[in-house]
Image (cartoon, rainbow, N blue to C red; front, side, top):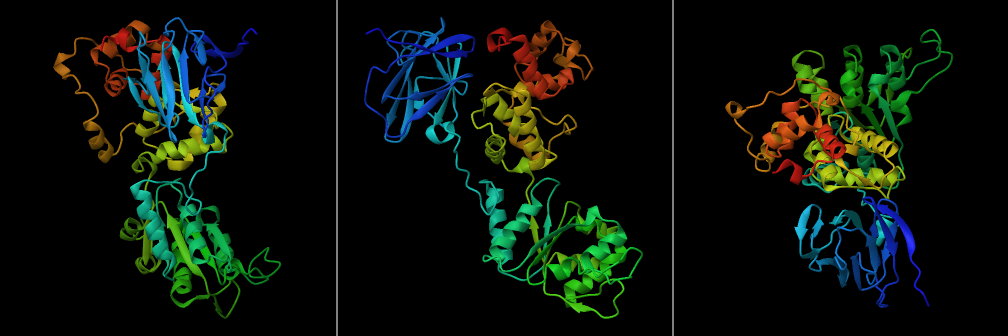
Length: 462
């Protein structure tokens, strides 16, 4: 009986075909290979890839050997072994002979690119371990979790400080879940920046009918509505000075006086506040009451910015791929490096928007550095700690007196020819950061131009 081959679509410009496996032993935990168009199950204990007809996975790539490499399993772990191929096998950019495969690693053989997946990821069911709705495994996040747990066991007012988009409201929700595990108390959120002065006073403390024009009925306010539970006031730094004495009394004595009322009312509320501003600096400028600041910050919690969370950036990026319905997509090593090196001034909110836009603008399953849609207004200078951390990784830049070419001063990549771009890369010895600085363009534009001009290490002679 003649063997049937089924077209799987192109990968790197070459046609891939599926051939029946020569071995019949089934793996207890199937894994997958993914190219631009297809997902291929690894169905044998020793799975061979190459251009030869006897391979389990046939790639019509003239730059691949007949038997290029094999993937085999030991227990629950998968390994790759190069079978003496002519052009070698690369995993995540490194030339290898044999090594253990990691999740979503990129395998390059000839001119074909394949991605290795465990079954969970390939079937769009990756499990992300959320801690009370928060995702993160870095040391700064573990420290944050510990602080939240400590705060949940007390009745002290908590002040959450963090940059815009860093997840302050998620921290407040986690604190509520720990403090009220049976959800026997309400959890209310109010943003102080979204109301005018008069409306904010009414929103927080309530008002009586006829207290002001338009007050056609009584309104209890957030403090009364959250009685017996938790009230989270976001952007507390926007609270007007005229309202701060009323909030101080609510915190110190548990009393509020609605607008138009003559007698105070008792409230029993756990108050949590948050701000992206440095309230201590506002106190020094007489923009915030000192006594209120000390009462609100009885238990301070600092939320780390995304740029300080290391590989949490990649974890969150994968999470957003799944959340936005693109679990089949993955990032190359260059794309991952670009995500790690970006400053993320908008933190998690910026990352979510970046991934969502990247998905919309790219149909391919493999997302390279040139495909990442970074915020154009992001600051170019990175914080000092990251600069110090990267010193040991970057190549030593050339001295200014060694410059023998004149660099342009423009923000447009349209004026950069291939010859000039290649000359700059050679001059900078492959240092992408230095090349971006010389050309006055972003690192993401560097990667886009490399892809557009089809420039490889051989072209750069570095």
